[in-house]
Image (tube, rainbow, N blue to C red; front, side, top):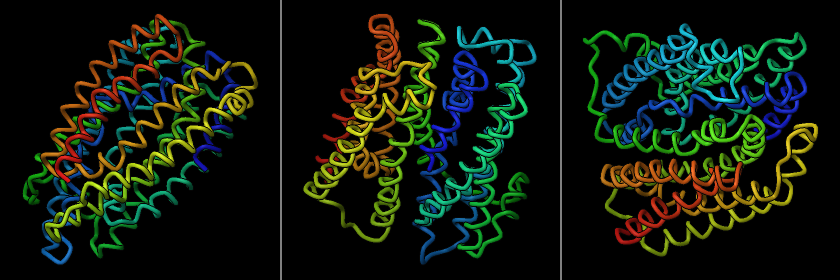
Length: 408
């Protein structure tokens, strides 16, 4: 559903504002992923808190939710300020490079303000995930995607500017997060809205979450910077056509990668519960078997991207943006190495494992940026994707697989 909505939305936006307008649109809706904040690793702490609270003291979970809500409130305010303040001084247009236009400042201010709100409400999605209700989250996200499509269709029909076109993406994220918070509260029999609303006063007791949240935040920030800076590199090294071409291919890659991620995420909850309930741990054969399953899934989806991607992208963009097999091959390779890594990443979610992943992801971020600039100059649009494949495989996949198997 997400993939279908992305295809239709892209087709409508390209038809309404052209290639240059779509390049700006794609750059802005992915800009939040570059923000060096994210949820600051709150997900890891919430999963651990839910696992510990089962059969134990529910007050521990309430304190963890309070601490998480306080953190996300501060993060959301910082994100909104990061969008509005530079826009007031007209700084976003030069920062975004060749793909930016006169509407860039207003569009980024709107996008990041709404994204700051959605960051706070992301606590609801995290809680449903920790409660092993991933299917409910996906259902609500699917409904949110349809709502976003309808809002974009309405905006296109009234010839709305780019600043309005980007708003539905983040508005629906807010709505989905709020709905997830209500649903999680009903499952836990806890008035979560009340807990979140009174999270600011210091008299509300919190709990220590830094030991899990900090390394998870580093992982999230590093991953976001690694992949989301690709458009910025292309925008400065090449031109808006390269940004639009990359974005069209990424519209196909993102839901495919999301499918594998959704399949892997329940392993995180399973392993967290296993660590809390017993000393039993998966052996080497179990981890290798899981990696094999995900490799098969990755190969299947990667072949679909490679065979169908260029044709679908051509339809999606009215044939105005060329997406070749070289670019789709690079995205297919990236999907495959990520698929193999997912079970390992989900297993290494205790505090030592998260710290090790944080170190490797940080190194990958630095290596990827250098390679992206070099390869973008050499081979153009596929360069940053090839850089991601090389840096992820060498710096993250291999070291973490060795660590996971040696501790299995």
